[in-house]
Length: 226
Image 1 (cartoon, rainbow, N blue to C red):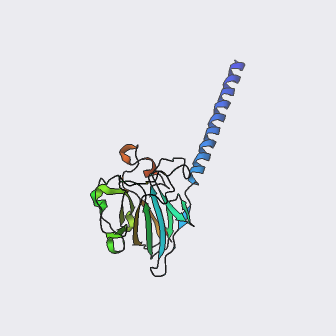
Image 2 (tube, rainbow, N blue to C red):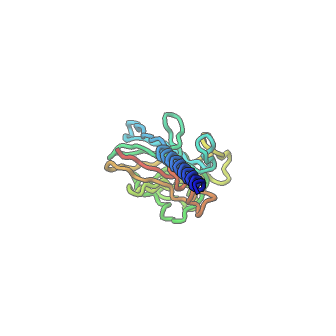
Image 3 (cartoon, rainbow, N blue to C red):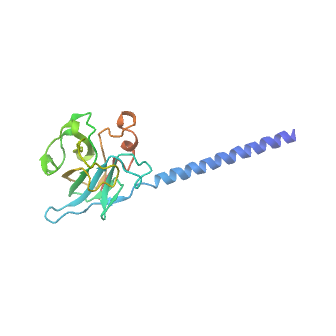
């Protein structure tokens, strides 16, 4: 009887120790995940003639092994001190104008909701695509969008043509086929505003909205207005 109780006690201690170890490991994992947010990138001063601040972004079809453990994921990158950084958290001043230059290296995926092909919430209600001012694009030509719902900003980004030569395989994508898109938007009061892409561009996931589409630092992030 004593031996049986002793064995049961040892098993209970063993199970308890294993559970405690598992809890510690889970805690470390959650802690690591919670503190591994992408770096915040501040907008830089725009030229005095335009005023406000400047953000320089690019979108890529595959972020590549240099930037991620998910090298085939589609992603946004931001220019920081002459280097491309995988971050989607941007800091901009309150009550000011933000000028965005975006280099679009991905092909088209198309929009399921044509409403998002209209430029909204930008200064003048327009964007420029390769130097041409437009207020909308063909919904089928959309590759990504830059959308800040709380600020009413909806900017569709047309994709690189399928037959274009010298297309980028993975980031960083400099000197390869792309579209150059510029637009400006006004910030309001201080706050944290969510932004994201609404094009279902995550190939291989359910409805195209999994993976990078729902992961911070790829196709969605925050605008910190300070």
